[in-house]
Length: 382
Image 1 (cartoon, helix red, strand yellow):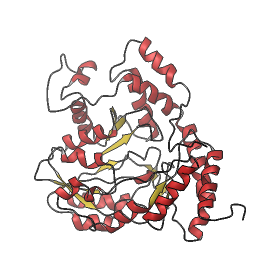
Image 2 (cartoon, one colour):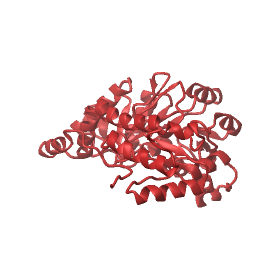
Image 3 (cartoon, helix red, strand yellow):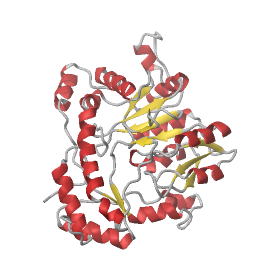
Image 4 (cartoon, one colour):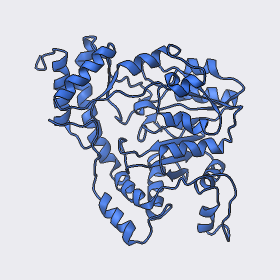
């Protein structure tokens, strides 16, 4: 048995479309396949002309931070339990991260804590839709609107997920998505930025094109293009976009395959929660999720490490997730230390992610589930 944590899934025409891009003579950014991807993403999220493809979710977040014109006098609030890019994008502008704890049920940002952290220096709220699940977006939006604070959704894991039937990534002033090979929809490395207002989109488009109005030039809106603001090279190659379009074209099938594995885990590992041995993902009534992550919250760090080793011996790769940013060397440089965010630290020590991707089927899920039940001494036929 050799079950990796993730295996990229080829859905159909990825290589064919890449060949088309090459033979068509256009492989740089903002090409035909890039435009088709943006149209498809707008369609999937029920929005109009709001999406810009980027080289990564990280670069999408950086564009948002640049457009917000943050400085060293500013702060932004984010969960500590997230990938480093969520913080880096804003720290690169000199802003100070203010770390919030997470909700023990959803593992999303704790809104009570957020409420207590808002000050006049807060210039962005950055929720992370962990595992394709969100916090209470109505309340988060209220917090932002009350204090006139922009919201930047880190929707790296959330394509296809929704809150009260509205797609995640369409609530904030900006949202960033990832198409990294570990995500539901992939192109190796890639991302997208969603801008709520046309003003933000136009500014972000310039930032994305090295600070120039090159995109307007190619649309015939100006007779030449020039340097108009600071920016960088954040446009996704059309070769990557060709791969991505094949994935987006088969979005529903990819999601069905992934959800079949997720639902198998949920059904066959529910006994762990019944017996008090582990907690399974909690899906709030307001969310429709995309099955991005299936995790177990175990009793303690030792149990998690023993289970990882047990599964490894059977050829099954399972992994933990984030080391809290507040307890990292960089977090400590901002005045944080271990013990300040107890829920985050407990989750970091006890969460275990199971193999999950669209390349797998229920047979793989059965092998993984049976091995986990064996570890806990549970008779799978009982």
